[in-house]
Length: 111
Image 1 (tube, rainbow, N blue to C red):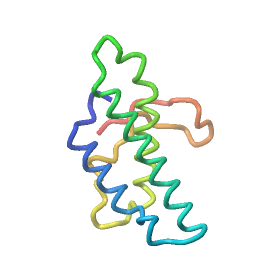
Image 2 (spheres, rainbow, N blue to C red):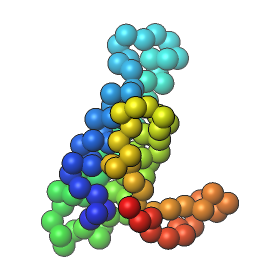
Image 3 (cartoon, rainbow, N blue to C red):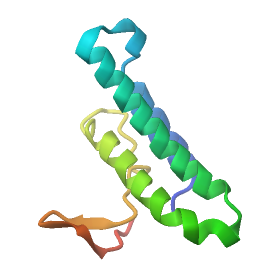
Image 4 (tube, rainbow, N blue to C red):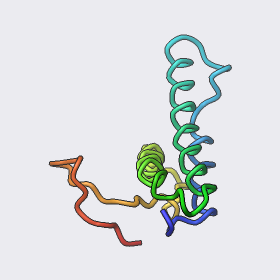
């Protein structure tokens, strides 16, 4: 998480939230889906920000959750990877996962 800058957090967060439609303008299943996506994204951002605001002595306790949350936020953003405003510099994962065995971390991804 140390290599992810505040600017990257802001870029990715802004990009993801700009893509999720406002639920108040929707009805039925579309409204529920937009609300769920916005809530899930907000929780991921909160975990990342909580970790970054935690004192250094507590970092070990929050880092795993923040890392998983960041990776999920990157996955949300990659839904729109072909969008012209896609923040490729911000959308970096903290770990690369093997698609055959997604629970096993294979290596740190380099920028």
